[in-house]
Image (cartoon, rainbow, N blue to C red; front, top):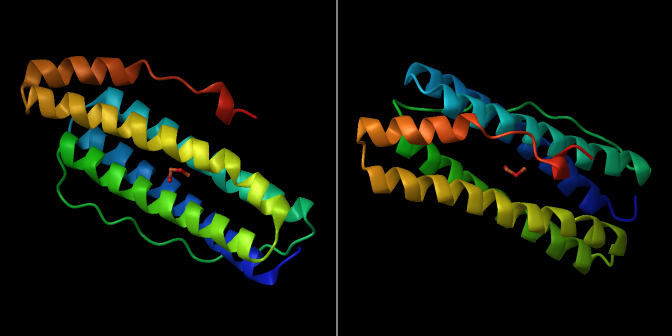
Length: 169
Ligand code: OFO
């Protein structure tokens, strides 16, 4: 690996992506408690996407002859959530991950690690998508303002979400 600092930061990012997966899995369970199967589907797909993100970083480290250090994954802490607070937390989390990706990109540049800088481009675009899709659901949830009929329709829409091809690669 070109830079030990970048290698360490990528290892931390693998952990963050796995934590993201864990958090979304907890959110899927919380959605089940709320009786919202479409939300369960949405969060489980998000969970699978985060595993794929962790794998992208993992595979990249191996390709660059780096060394992988797997750390313990933190426990996701959810309180008694509503459909809206779940998505607000998801957005706050994605904004946090976006910042980590930007910090990683800044570090790659500071270390003249051009390969990592290019590799991270995919994640920069992915974070735009992650934040936008989460924000879109928040907008809908705010519009229905807890109305059960509206919530039912949103749940049906989230039930139709399928695996996106960009995450199958
Ligand atoms: Fe891996 O993008 Fe969400 O957290």
